Amino acid sequence: MKKNNYFQNVFDQQLEVLLIGEFENNTPTIVLLHEGLGSLEMWKDIPERLFKELGLNIFVYSRAGYGKSSTINLPRPINYMNLEAEKYLPKLLSEFNLNKVFLLGHSDGATIAAINSTLDNNNYDILGTILIAPHFFIEEMNIVSIREIRNIYEDNLKKKLSKYHNNPDIAFYGWNDVWLDDKFKNWNITNILKNIKIPILAIQGKDDPYGTLSQIEILEENLKGKLKKLILNNCGHNPLIDKQKESINKIKEFINQIEIK
Image (tube, rainbow, N blue to C red; front, side, top):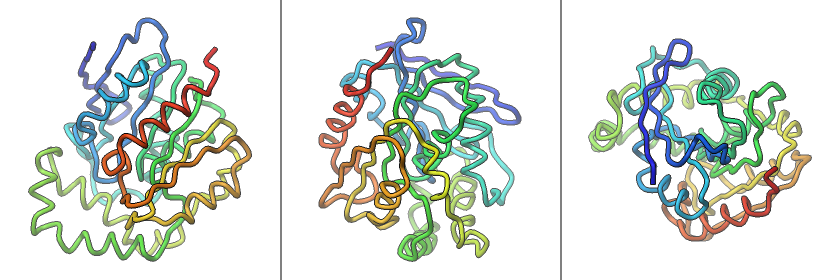
């Protein structure tokens, strides 16, 4: 397994990147987009498992303010996920001359993947997108959970996150402050879902404290292209941890059904 680590400049940011595979042979690449408190290292062994199971190149990175990537100034803008999807992600993938990709996003990363999948001006072909616990609109239970996690951050979560982020306060408050901002209450991107024309796989745990099945239902109502779903019992916010075998098998099935030219 060939692995390479980089720091890549993208506009005003320096992002840590991990490549797994043979990028010289034009094999399609799975691009992993982490959750709102995630980072490159917080995927743990999932990138290697995906490479082993699927035989495709794997591209992993930490967004600015996370992991070992460059820091940011707080507060993050309310439209931070749109900025990632429309500005930074396309530029990053273009820097590595990626041509054919599958986007695989978790939570915030899934929302970023969905937004990027609506764009017509990407310099790469998205063969399919995997959305794990995506957010398309605000749910009250989601805000309650985010408020609760803020209350325990200083107690023990900060210590855990410090293992993965150069500045855990930037990572945490950059995410948490936006979601609890009154101006964010009306955030909603369901109107753009109809612009996704590529195949989508949506994976959702029934016990996710950050989102209900309504997120997947609104996707199904608005999507014009093909949609595959995996709804998991006894599964929380991260199906790749809680139900890893089932999730990876479904991802493999989804990708194998897509014709790669």
